[in-house]
Length: 558
Image 1 (cartoon, rainbow, N blue to C red):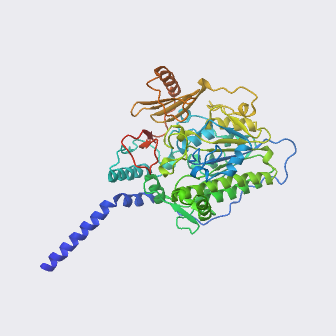
Image 2 (cartoon, one colour; image 1 turned 90 degrees about the vertical axis):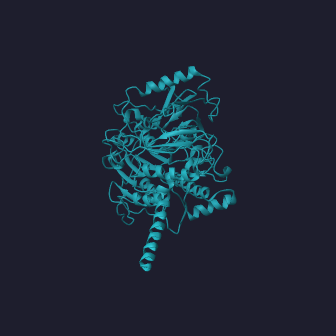
Image 3 (cartoon, helix red, strand yellow; image 1 turned 120 degrees about the vertical axis):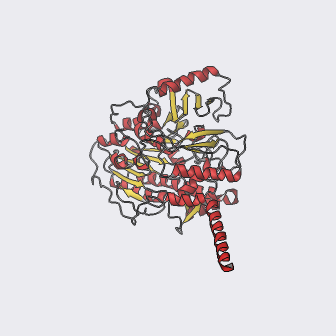
């Protein structure tokens, strides 16, 4: 009897211990289970058989080649072009700086949104979400629910004064992640250029859908598509990782991620090296294959998006520059930036080598501002805010355009422009006709050549994500957050870093810009799917900083 009691007691204690472990680690257990659901098998690396153009160039004039290099989550101060750079300028971007100096720098350029996919849709179509309905970034299966759970669990354990995130389970007939994307009837710049006999190639991130919404079905003859989130396998001997224990998004990406590409919608395979370098290698092959015909290369890098992974060589080079003046995560981030900068230099050098530089347009930009959740200070300096906010730090983007045949080196353009303007500009440069649908972007060639008038309806640019709606008209910018009916009104001419909210002091200007927002929303296309997650984002602190009840917070629905 005593033995049975001891066994039962021991079993009970074991169950209590197991139960306590499961309770304490319930979020990680659920995360690892959810994150791996639906993961396909990945083949070994393959050699891509890129289509080969003519062996000799046709006689006569030829339209310009177009190379569009898009970075991901690049802060305006990540690059040293504007006199800054990471770690007080110790981490520089000489190749991006060279590109900027050899063409036009748009000093007041904006991304289309403060998060990935809507910006990319505007780049491709020249149209606002009010027309396309593509308003929110598609998130992988389980991400919204898991990120919310992880974040709120962290805040509970730290007794954070910041409000909890909110997860809203989508109801009704809502497409899943693989069914979300830019509608196939939308006309992309690739489709326009293809009609004008350009060979069109996409390499890298797409984030505008799969299947009929995939790049290879939206105007690109060839598409080397990013299928997953690692730059190298996590245990690769040549990689240095920086996991962020304070960031719920990072936790999800490390659990969900893998190392995979696909080609033209085919089966996934392992990339042939560190992602930024591998995509650049393949881009050089594309340039060489198409040197005798007009081509459009859209090189959409994953860098410098999390997860933070640098090659050991890049990490060591950054470490030698900054030493103890930077955190481990900043050194890894700096290594990723070094690889991105190297990519730009290699593309420029290849165009020179093939004799294509003079008549090739190179555009460089980022899909949105730098992310505060990576815990690296100063990436958007001097601007306030981060990715997932509509403050300047979230939507300011570098935009550099090099075209020696038309653009004088050292050109600076102060007129506000945005991603929606690139599609009509590139179409005009190629001599292509715009589609017979309303285009919100404006052709910037008159600005570039300084030979004509550049106008925009109401002199206004717009941004939105659900109840967060923003307009910049002239030098005035209004940000309206409908969740709390809160307004931020800034005169950017006097206050470019948004320190002085004039919403109460200037009700006339507030009313004027509110009417513009209402006008922009009138008759809008309904969002293709609802947001499922709402996040309170600290404007003036990174996620690694200790939170205070006095922190300025803006809500972000996605």
